[in-house]
Length: 114
Image (cartoon, rainbow, N blue to C red; front, side, top):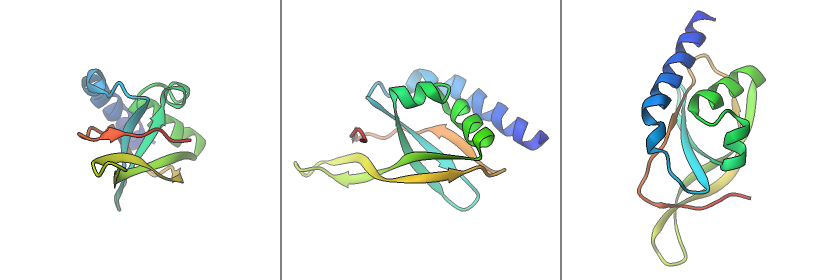
């Protein structure tokens, strides 16, 4: 329990430093990091607002609900041949003691999900 509190406090602190650099696009990307892997997810403005508006809010929502359904994002080629980041599939993210959520920056165009 204490480890989780420290984890969320750390995530909230990281967000306070990184929040001004978040993308102004319709989709905001976050990286969810666990012991085994990391996943890039995208949230639209309404979803982000419902989850608290930042990475700390997302982490708290996952921890309190036990799981969260979100869109996984990945780099793909657009119709014009340029790289872009778009939705791949809906996934379920399960609460995990080693979970970390952080804003994700990348240079490509971000496409909205359904």
